Length: 301
Ligand SMILES: [Zn+2]
Image (cartoon, rainbow, N blue to C red; front, side, top):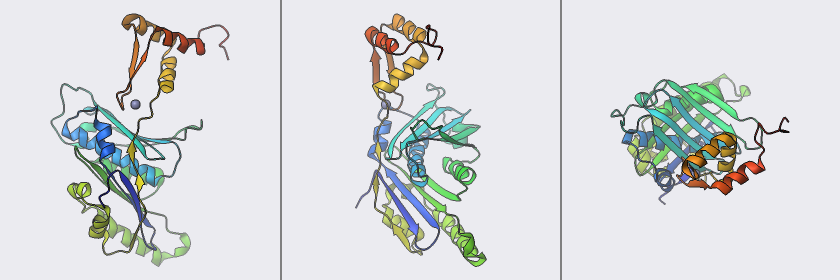
């Protein structure tokens, strides 16, 4: 069966190695509807979206996980976000849209900077944040560094994307129980080294085109693997009227009123899905009638 917009987990039978595979097609198309980028940026955006899905699968959490790349390269913004239900969205912006980068290089696109992973449980508790410097020469390498530093989990990742699909394969070595002994430890280390080398043989084209079963057979055919049932991955934006209203409230009454006066309407466009939210004079009245402005009397507490 042809599987797209699916996430699948697999493990090495009786060994502390596990993996996740994802391939996006409709969700990737939906995320790109309002975004037109040079090929190198499209590829990186797709890789980030597939990677975010894999991160969510590998790190158990409830809420939202946001992957953000911030650097001094030609890319001003790269954000991909996923919920624990595998609802994805992603956006990229160039620093200078009129002068797109000619180079394909990841380093030139991102420059010196950081990769930030934020997990927000949405229950009012402070978000978890893991930050690593962008030292790798690919997004996959930067994410491997993230897992190594922040999760203490040796991880290998391959990612690929083009205009039609985005895909990724992640492999992780889980901790070996201390009681297992030196010989078992050595065996797992050798297995991990071998599996890592095999994973590195997967070419981007294969990752985008191959179905999961033949792909695993091709790469890890020598091992006994167990493949779990697929989970569905979809594009879904999290924006809504309420969020935009609270964004405007946080901007402050004076700021919002001045935009209203200038333009007759306050329009906020979601950067992920391009949905426009419009607030007219009456909406703005209601916005600030409900929330007292910080400088009004009686708002000391
Ligand atoms: Zn949206």
